[in-house]
Length: 363
Ligand code: IPM
Ligand code: MG
Image (cartoon, rainbow, N blue to C red; front, top):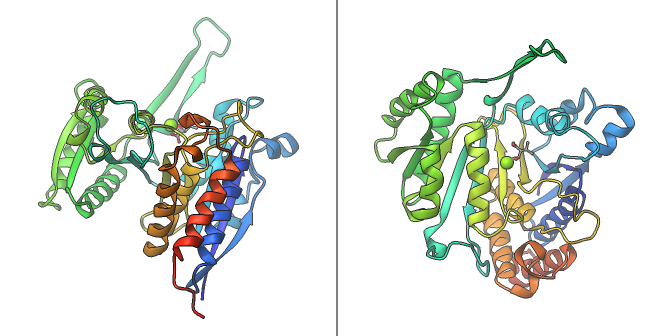
């Protein structure tokens, strides 16, 4: 029997509620079959750790994650600590330290979810946003001078490298090629940003030649937002820069019904390092500790984790269980207009996993 070593980093806010829920459904799934099991290690990094140690995670923290098969991450964000400190001290430290350069964000309208667009049928919205996750606007290049003086200056420079753009384009074309419609939209802003984004476009064209069977087009990021609302079915796979995709993925999640549902994978496609899976919703301090958080974003992230490990059948079983649960409005949490608690949704998903006999347990 295979053992997968999973690092769990609940982080802050509702991360502490949804990550244990994710662990529970993964355990339930493992119990239905004999092919694999999980060995979880939890790390108490985040805002509380910062309060005690003055840093979000230990300086050598990456070393203890390195031998894991995957990381399940909750959220980083604490009202007591500036956001850029929590972000750079934990999540980005892992993403950039492990060169998880492809951030993958699938969006669909799950069964039972009342999505806000009037004319959008569930089958019209089936997207995957590929976010460049290692450079661009999040490269951390910039600085401040003359602080506190009237001539104070500050810059955040978006930095793109040919190698960085080539690898994310290749990843996106490959992903588009693996999906039934083989359709890729390259999101750009090369009309206004005439250096890096022009190179981005040139590299998209260059890489497209490696994928003659993929249909692709280009869309300016502002126009892309309107197209997502007005013609959702015209999109399938999208690739965009770090910041553009950050914004588009929130729009995508909202159009699919709730930020509480949306998953992410921070992927190292070369598998030199563990990849990291997380719900996109953030720490949500307003509802933390009340048991109201929607664990579905974490469960869907667990589906992506299983896919990454090559456990396709288990991934399918978990997604099917999640969809059976979202289909029942009595099992919707507050973000979906319901009254269900984190524990009720988690129990229901575990019940569906057991009920379906998700895998064949040998006698
Ligand atoms: C996301 C989040 C983060 C980001 C925040 C928490 C800094 O919005 O994962 O999309 O912008 O990358
Ligand atoms: Mg975001």
